[in-house]
Image 1 (cartoon, rainbow, N blue to C red):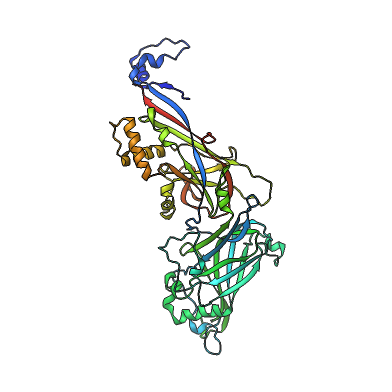
Image 2 (cartoon, rainbow, N blue to C red):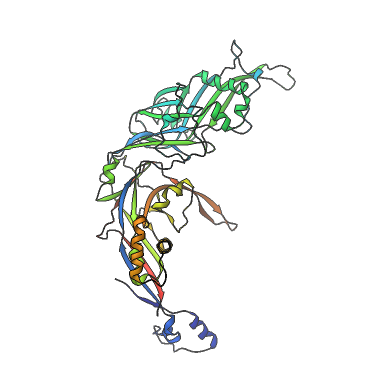
Amino acid sequence: MKTIFRFRTWMGIALLAISGFCVSCDDDTASIGSSLMPGGDAMLVSEGAYNVLTRSVRVDSVYANTNACYLGRIVDPETNSVTTCDFLAQFNLLDNFSLPKYDAMMHDASGQVVADSCQLRVFVSSYQGDSLAPMKMLVQELDTSRVMEENVKYYSNINPQDYVNPNGGIRKTLMYTVRDLSLADSILNSSSYYTNIKVKLPDSYGSYLLNTYYEHPEYYTNSYEFLHHVCPGFYFKTEGGVGVLVEVDVSTLDLFFRYKTKKSSESTENDTIVDGFVRLGATEEVLQNTSVSSTGLNDLASDANCTYLKTPSGILTEVTLPIDEIVGGEHYNDTINNASFSLARMNNLGDNEFSLSAPTNVLLVRKKDYYGFFENEELPDSKTSFITSFSSSTNAYTFSNISRLITICKNQRDQDAGVTPSDTEAEREAKYASWEQENPDWNKFYIVPVKAEYSTVTTGVGTSSQKLLRVRNEMGLYSTRLIRGDEDGKIQISVIYSKFAK
C-alpha cells in the first residue's frame, strides 16, 4: 500500500509576499500552493514496505587485531555452546631502553649477572562467568625463529603451536581464580587493586634477559631485534577448567634485580645496593592475538526459527535486501529519500545469572566487503557500511536510513550489467538476470558485532561530541537471538520515495 503526498515549492509564496499581493485570510489554506505554482512543479512522495530475508552464517574465525586479549572457557547457558580462548603476546621494548652498568650489577661466582626474580602478570579488565571458578593455565615461550610479524593478517583461528618454541623453552602450569583468595578482602576490594594473574618464571630466565643485554646490546635497540633474538613472547593457554572468560587489558614481563650505586655524588665507589625493576608491556606497538575455538555452533546456525549473533568467533546474521523490488518497476527513476529496517531481539529462554548479553554495537556491511573492511581498518561511511547500537527500549537494532546504500547498489548493478537509460524494463530484467548469475551476493549484507572506540571532542564553545576512532571485531563473549526474516514479512524495510509529477 502506498501513500501519495504533494508538495509545492515555497518560492512562489516568497515571491508573492515580496510583490505585495494579498491572499484571502480564511481558515482553509489547502489551496495556497496549488493556486500559486504550475502543476509541473508538484513532487510526488510515496512509501512502500518490502520483506527482508535473514539467516545465520557460521564463521570459523574473525580478524583478530584487537588491543585486548581473552583467556578462559565458558558455556553459554542458553545454547550450551562452549567457547575457549587463549592468546599470544609479544612485549614491547621502549625506546632508549637501558640497564645499569655491568660492573654495578650483582654477579654470581662465574661473573654472570643474576636476577632476583622474573614474572608475567596478566591484568584483567573484566570477566564473564564465575570469578571463583578454578581454571588451569599453561604458559609457553614462543620461538625466535617463528615470530608473529606486523605485515601478516592474523585471524582468531591462528594455531599457536606454529609459534611455540619446539625445543621446550619456558613451560609453566598454574591454577588460578579471577578473585585471588590468597589476598585479604581489604586488598581485593581496594580501589587501588587491579585484578591480575601472576605467573612466576624461573629466576634463570631473568638472568638470561640481563646477560643478553650486556653480551648483545644490539638486540635491545628496538622491539624488532628484541623479539627476533631475545624474547619473542609467550602463549597463554587455557589448559583446564570451565566457567569464566577474562578480558586481558595488558600483560607484562617483570624483571627484578639488584645493583650497586653511590651513596652520594662525592662517593668514589658503588657502596649501596638498591633494588632495580624493569617492566615490558604487551602494548599495541607489538602483537597480541587471541585464539578462539567454539563447539555446538553449527546446529545453532541452522536454526530455522531465528538467527544468531554470537561472538567472538561464531555466528553472524546475513541480510538479503529486496533491492530489486525497491528500485524496480514504477520506482526505477524515483529518488529514495529514506530506507530503514530493524532486527528485533528475541528474549532469553530462561533466567540465568550467567546469561550472555546482546552485542552492544553491530555493523552492517556488504558481504563482499566484509573481510576488507576489518583488514583495512575502515570506519563506517554511512554509504556502504553503517553502525548502530542495541536499543533496550525497542529491543532491537535499527538502521534508520540506508537509502544511499540502496542507490549505490542499484547504480553499480546497472553499470556492471550494461543497463542503459533507453532500455525497456524487460531488457533491464534480462541483463540483470544474466549478471546476477555471476554476482549472487550483490544484495547480501552481514550484521557483525563490533567493538567501537570513541574519543570525546570538545569545541571552542564548550560543547562536546563523540568521534568514532576505530571499529574492530567484537572479541568478547556475547550472544543473542534475532527474529528471522522470511517471506511472511516478519522483517520489512520501509522506503520513502519522491519524484516530480509529470
